[in-house]
Image (cartoon, rainbow, N blue to C red; front, side, top):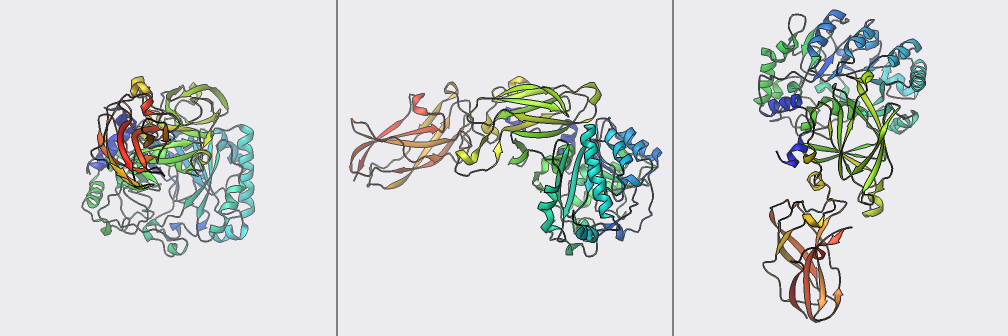
Length: 596
C-alpha cells in the first residue's frame, strides 16, 4: 500500500467493510450496521408544523427496558452511533435515564434530541451528571411569535428558561455532555437565523447548528410550503442508508430510514428476531435489490426524497457517510473546523488557531495525524485539553502523529478535545484574498480503533498528496525538463505559449498547491551581460506531477521591451523557497532568441 493510499483510509475496518458491500451492491451484508436509531417513544407533547407526527397513524407507546437491553446487548462492540429518538420526545419515557445508564460507556456514541419543554432543573442536573454523550436541543426560534407558530402547544417562556438554566448548570458542573442548540431553517424563521446563533454563549461543549428542513419524501402534506427543496434525479442512484444502518421503533418494528415514520416498509421486529436477522432479512434484501435495479420510484420512501443519495451528502463525500460518528458529530458540533474536500474519498479538516474535536474512545488510545500548514513557522506548539483538563503540549513539525492516551474514567466515552495553537496565519494576507479563513493545522487522519500508523508512513509524507505543496528539500529534488520546440524569434513584448515536458525523477510531488506552489518561469539575459529580466511570468503547474511521472505543461513567455539578441533561460521556482537552478545543474535551459 502506498503512502497516499494509506491516508485515503478514513474508515475503520468495519466501516470499510460496509462501504465495500455498498460499492459491490451486495444484497447480503456480513458486517453489522454501524448506525442505529432507537425510538424510546413516539409520544410528544408538541405538534410542530414540520413534523410528520401529525400524519402518523401507528400506535403511540413507549419502549420497555427489556427490549432496549436486548438491542444494546447485541449492538455493543459492533454499532458506533446510536440516537435514542425517532419520532417523539425521549424525556417522556420514564425509563430514559435507565436507558442512558445502560447504553453509555460501551464505545458507542449515544445521543438524543429534546424539545426542552421537560428540561426542568432536576432533569437537567440528571442529564448533565449522566454519561450521555450528546444532546440536541431543538428550539427553532428565540422570538415568541415565531416559536408559537412553529412549535404548536409549546410554552415559549418556560422553554427559554429551561435552556438558559440548563446551560448555566452545564458550566457550573463542568459537564462532559456535548450540547448542540438547533434551529431548523424554514420560511418562518429564515430572517432570525443570525439572531438565534448569536443568542447562545458558544463555549467548550456548547454549539449552535442550523439544520436544513427534511421533507420526508414528500409524504407530509404542505411541507413544501415551509421551505424550498432541491429534488435530485434519483434515477440510477443507489441510497447508502440501507447498507449502513437501521431504524427501530418503540415496539421493536424495524424500518429502513427516517422517512418511514408510519411503518410503510417494515423489515422485521426485534422482539422476535435479532438485529443481524433483520439486517439481512428477505425484506431488506428486496429493498436493496430495488435500489440496485434502479426502481427507486416504485418505493414511496425513495421517490420523493430530497436527500442526495449518492456522490455527495450535505457536502460530505460518500465515503464519509460510512463513518457515522464523524458525519453526525461534525454536522452538529463544528467548533473551529473547516471541511476541505480534496477528492471524492478523502476529507481533510482545516482548523483555526483554536478548535475542538469530538472523538469516540474505543478502549484504544486516540491517534491524530496532523500537518503544520503555517508557511512562516516550521514548528507550531499545540496545547491540548481533554474536557477541562490539561493533556499536554506538543510540537507540530511537518506531518506529525500525536498519541492521546484515554484516562481510565473516560474509557468507552465520547471525548471532547480542545486544541489551541501557538500561532496561525491568514491566506487573506498572503495570497490576494484567496481564502479569508484563518488556518492553523490540517487534520489528515483520526484513528480511534486501535490501528497503529507506522512511522514510515508519515514521517516523509508529502503534503502535496493531500492538496498542500510542502517545501521541497533539495536532496529530494530531481527533474528532467524537455522543450520540444521553441521559436527562435519574438517581437517586442510579444507573448507566446511554450510546451514543456517535465519528468519528476525525485521523491516529492510537484504542484501549484499552497502554501509553497511550484511554477515554470524564465529569465531574459543579454548575451554576455547581466539579466535584463530576472523573473518572467510564472506559469502554474495545473496538475500534480508525481514521482516518476512525465507530463506536458504549457508556460507563457513574454519578450523584453527592447530589440536585440538575448538568451532565454527556462527554469522552475518554488514560491517562498528557492529557484530550482540553485540546486540542479541541468537548469536553466538556455536558448538564443532574436527580439525584433
